[in-house]
Length: 41
Ligand SMILES: [Zn+2]
Ligand SMILES: [Zn+2]
Image 1 (cartoon, rainbow, N blue to C red):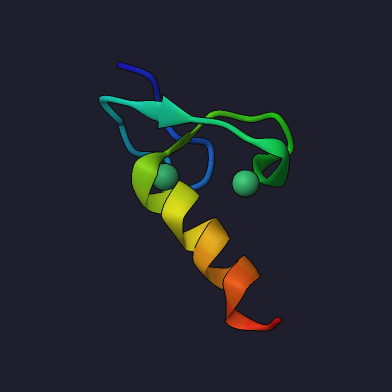
Image 2 (image 1 turned 90 degrees about the vertical axis):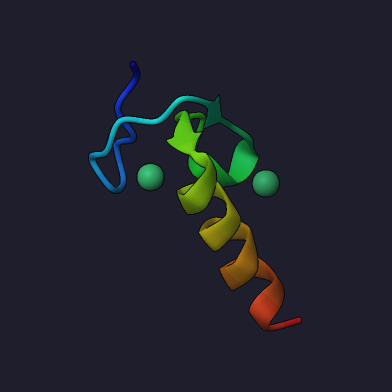
């Protein structure tokens, strides 16, 4: 299984987008990144 570079945990699925700097991250980290992005308008 791939390992998330942010939380260093194994993830079944990895997601990537422009906000992750082209890196694949786990779904939890992915959601957290976008949560922070939408926190402040
Ligand atoms: Zn992660
Ligand atoms: Zn994004």
